[in-house]
Length: 412
Image 1: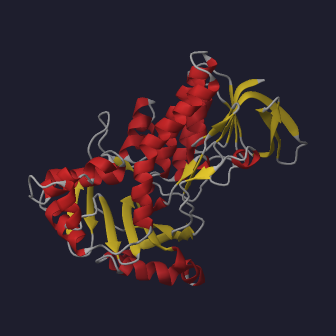
Image 2: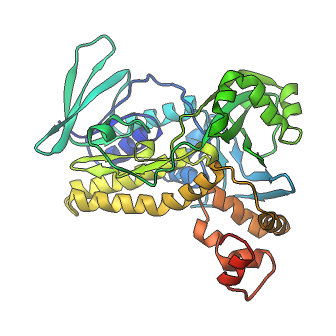
Image 3: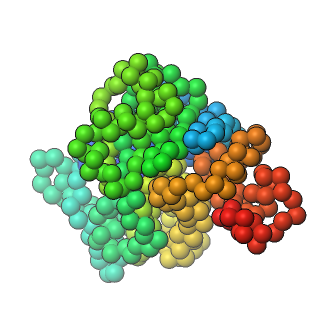
């Protein structure tokens, strides 16, 4: 019997398994994929996620895999441009955009080094329960007979359509539904200086350097345009890139490597992430639209929180229920504010005139611009950035209270 069985060996699962093994627990981690294995992804490891990799001694491996650091970022909102840098977290001041072929294999290898038993090409058919608690999994390797593995604790790192979440009937909350559709592509010969983001009517567009000298472009559009994108994805994506300054022209001068990849299966919700001897991590527990590029970092941070909670319970310092309730509170304290920002972005609400005034003021204040990019990276708290004091300070207005700011239409 294993102490912990982790279903799913991508970012959330491999990280959780790695951290649990480093805490001395026996861990089995299974995945139906064989690594290296690609998957649809936002690519971005925001600064808090990169800081987590640094704490675990793995960021240097990401960098050694020829993953460029992005420190300078540019936001073009149509009526102006804001440039800045990311605030540092634990000495890390850059965003990274690794391909999942590289990042996932790297994490799986690190988990194995820590003592995790990783089984690839293993499909989980059922989560088993006994005496009112999760007790194991039943599954099979390709072409092999089904088998059962027992575990004292089961972790679901199996994504937004989690088998464990369904089996345990984990309730949803903060459900915002599907708001957007998104596509990305890789380009050779598309120069980019740092990161570029563009806010346009009914579009959000990002450009980031990734591995192998390639550049990745990301396009998000409202969900009601999903059928148009599916009908002619190349035309729709190039039309979108043409909205972003000279990006369409630069893309045509470059060479696209592979096809445009994307999906409209982009729900937004939280799940209660625990029950009797089971827990959910990453997208299995909380999923948000990729428009904000938070998924990988949220998974890494969740893994750290959950592994600490599970270890605390195994060591007898708290009951499983108490430790896991604490995991949910800490996860929500960190994730809910950026979730609110993400769903606002994915709603594609037109920018109000007064918000444009605020952005113009922001563009002329480098320190405030850096805090804006810190907000987007999940470093600067949403409530702090959107506070009346901060907004009015950016606009050069002092001594004015929240009520006056609200009457001015600043949305705070």
